[in-house]
Length: 64
Image (cartoon, rainbow, N blue to C red):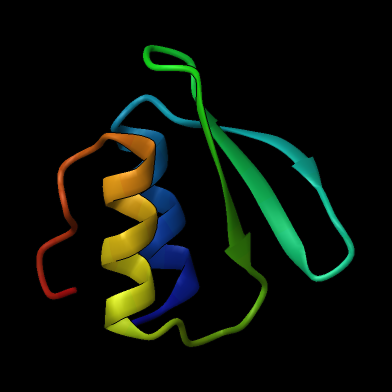
């Protein structure tokens, strides 16, 4: 899955970019306080995308 699609989904669910790390972006869900890193690859495996959504406490992206 494309990284841009995952980031758009996270933003739509209320999550925001906290900071940029070395090879990952750090995203936070202000509603739950959960923090999760998102790899900076053009393609992110579906399993990884599902895991990121679950850990942030948002709905799982369709197609992931």
